[in-house]
Amino acid sequence: MTSTTPTNLPLVLLVDDSVDVHRLLQARLRHEQFQLIGATSGAEALQLAETMPVACILLDLDMPVMDGFEVLRALKDKSSTHSVPVIVLSGLNSSDDKVTAFDLGATDYVTKPFDLSELRARLRASLRLNHLLTLLAERADVDGLTGLGNRAHFNKRWSEQFAEASRYGHALSLAMLDVDHFKKINDTYGHPAGDEVLQRVASVLQSSCRQFDVPCRFGGEEFALIMPNTGPADAAKVAERIRQEMADLQFPRHPEQRMTISIGLAGTDGGVGAMNAEEWLESADKGLYQAKRTGRNKVTVNNLTPSQTLRLAKAG
Amino acid sequence: MSKRSAQSIGLTGSSSEQIRSQLADDADMAELIEQFVRELPERAESLLRAARQAEFEQVRRLAHQLKGACGGYGFPQIGELAGSVEQMSPKGAALSNQEVERLLQTVNELNSMCKRAVAR
Image 1 (cartoon, one colour):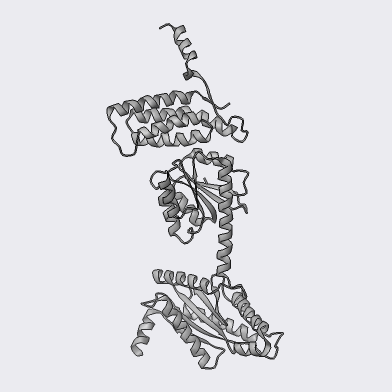
Image 2: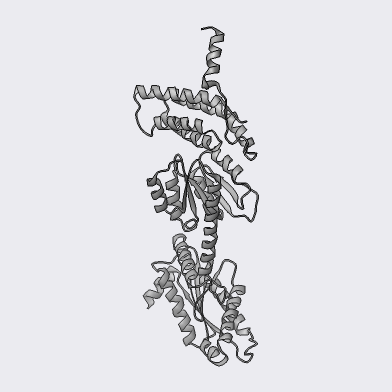
């Protein structure tokens, strides 16, 4: 029942097993500033909500096989659908059901038969809420100075990528990057010069990494680059490209003073052994400090592929 | 009873009056209501069939949907009766002969009421 017309209007997903309700609301809501798509079962609803950028869900409670409460629970359990506002529709005006719905995470509750103007107003309110939540989520994940993902974004993406690599035995690499002698720039040329350096590092990171890589500002003058499906050898090439580009850059504010970065990299060709996400991060960090200690402006690579980790452990 | 007297009974009783949608004047709804009214007798028949075959879960389901739909399409009287049918066939409950009898009677009533619905 999904409409195929692509528009920029927000998507509202109607979940109801009754075709009458779909027809009715399609007619009643066709002049609103959103596009209505439909599902006639809980399973179909969950599948649509996960694959489409749904802005609000109208959810009927009384459905066979999987009822509205179950659908609501499943929606709130998944990170991809967790924050989508859900308006529960019910023929029952019972306090118990309302309380259960709100406790499970519903945003609003409307009883059938609908008062159309009320339903429209409630839909608009939920869409406003979704818009603000989306804005907030974006802001909360973005570093204001560089436009890269911030530490929170890094933490989220890193644990996702780590979990996936350990579950499926995929290759994965992580690089930690730190600007050499950054404090001197701030002290000598002032904070605007320092800010500019950070912004240039960010744009080098963005232009030198691949589309599926995840560059983040880790904090201060430290950056992180997650490279999914990439073993340490290929990741080292990316890191080296970044190091070189950075070293070649000239800065209008201080043309005589080039900026370099040191990079510590830890990656696996497949499997992570017994290592957890934090230990992996520490391994990349150790590499970074080793690069700093041994002269800066260089890349240090730690290969974490399990057989090699074992060999290293025995040798050490 | 002669043909003439049966007819006169039918005319005086409310059971032959047409039931018009409360939303009949709403241009947005005209087409939808017509479609709904067209399909209504068939839905009522399915409900009756389910009740006769003692498929009470199905009766409950159909009555529930009909109740909701009737409300939305401007037939609250029919919706109310559908609601009664829904309540008479509760989830998982065993019905006594008397209850089944009452249910069948109400479904019959609902069936004839559905046939009196008109779009405009």
